[in-house]
Image 1 (cartoon, rainbow, N blue to C red):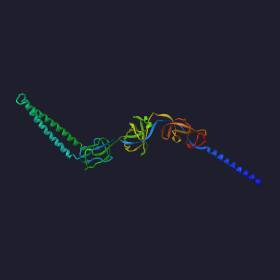
Image 2: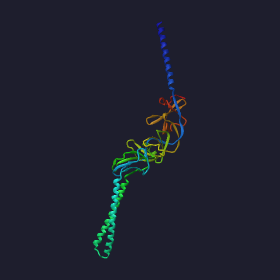
Image 3: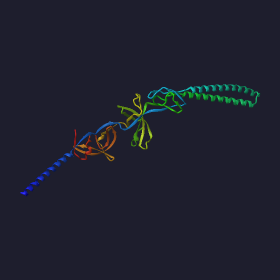
Image 4: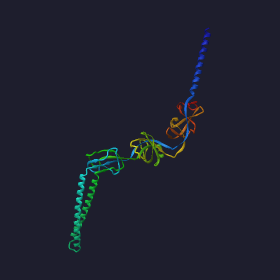
Length: 357
């Protein structure tokens, strides 16, 4: 009886083991069927471009400085105010400069009177010298005094012009059409020659500056179209053109600085704004695009999984430019093939998949 009981117990253990093994096989079969989501590779017409970020700068910025010493008599503008070219934006007290002009005018009149008298004397003595009534020394003396008198007149005229010029510089003019960025003086302040008084900026057109990676520098040229967007102005794309490609790279960042110019007739683009930039580098063409989320990076290679029937096949690809959320594929994927976009991290070549609808 004991032997029969042992045999029955062994049979029961064997049944349990077989049942567990069968359950594991079924579980493994279920796990091999991996759920994925796919997207079709599409052929679309695109314009090749490079994406980068940039900043908006004023077209010109000028520091307006005092050209003479004196006390600020009056200012006519404040920060943010529009100005036009040659508009008076401030005045320096001109009292001393007016007196300087008057003194220069008086000196000139005196020099001209001396010249006139000396010229009359020269003419009289020249006539006497021809008749040999005076010596050559006397004639040479009056000739020299005439030249000196003429020199004094020329010097007086130069002094008067200088005085008038200094007087004119007591009025401070805007050098361009634009806006007052900063005002550094007020009425009553004493300024010296070279003291910065205002910062004036020109905002139309504006500059758009950005950097290009070293590998892309041959793709960017003067005259290329640029599109950019501003976070504070959503759903609006602005246009610009490349105006300057700088001749040297930044040695630390290994990037090339580029400047584009854009119209700003409405004045909505403000210096300092951050911009998302696209530089169009070629004419439009047809390419095959796949979602960028489908790509797996493996060292310096890129691969995707293509669903053929219910099997995932691994493909290495040769990628081109990036267009928003899509990447151009030059080799490895054909139009209309199903590319795994979700679940591809768990795949290997030849694994069976269940495509989620």
